[in-house]
Image 1: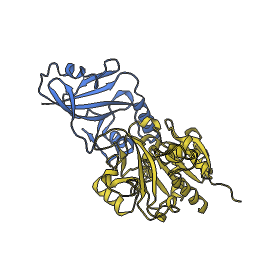
Image 2: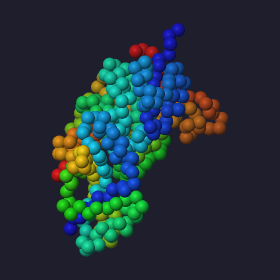
Image 3: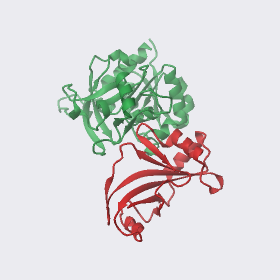
Length: 141
Length: 258
């Protein structure tokens, strides 16, 4: 079955900070921005140890700097856009029970007070900076 | 005697080819100066702009995406819209695409194409290549002094140099004569084997509709003197100009005319 994880940095994310300052300069009202690698796998293993199996792949996950969240819904969270290359393909990965996965970049926008940004703000950020429609598509829940 | 044209070589955090770019500009008689991002307000005094290679803003978000929105590009975009010349090389070319300066088929900062990760294998390419002028020289002001079909040696050094766009935009790029340079073999023949990165249309460089902006992926400034050239012999004058100088000479001649 299809399973989705978000692998984000727990150390300061310079790329997210640069994108945040660029978005603010472009007039997008966002208080905080988080970036994550979104991996979707076709998993034939057990659900219970799914996260642990992914965390064992040291090219995807470094416990010193990453934090992993399983996204049960398999779709972007509120305030989040997933950016995918138009020509994206499944790539092979070495994880027990999983042979390949699809990588996207997730950008999670927050308004003041830590609430997820509204859809209009996410779309504005995607349009202004986060997605080049010539080569990428944005997925917003 | 007329003063040499003043050229700004733009530096963003992460640009790394500014010194050789300034050197080749000076060697062809231009009054070239390195201008850092913190000095953007000085840009209007320049006659033309060169965006050199590197990894501006560490390629964060996408190659060229953050610098395309840097205040420094406000000046460059406005200058190009008023007819000044702009030349981008490698990362500079990526920035020009993200800024919408080339192919210029969409709105400013609404890119209709990208130089994106190489294909079919997404590896960094470091390879000596040749690029061939694919339009009439006068189609682009910067190439106007080149002979028809000019062949220029250069070094491809990029992980993201493949032209990509939607089929509709690629058609618009082809039909509009925006492909200024194609990858070619050393004898000038053009075919898929000469393309080091899977670039659509075999494209190595793009120009805009007006022909005053040119973005090329390989580095002619890295094959500008004989010591840069892979076939150099010990008996050659190492400091003599090599083929990459041609493009910058044409750039200088364009500035003399303008």
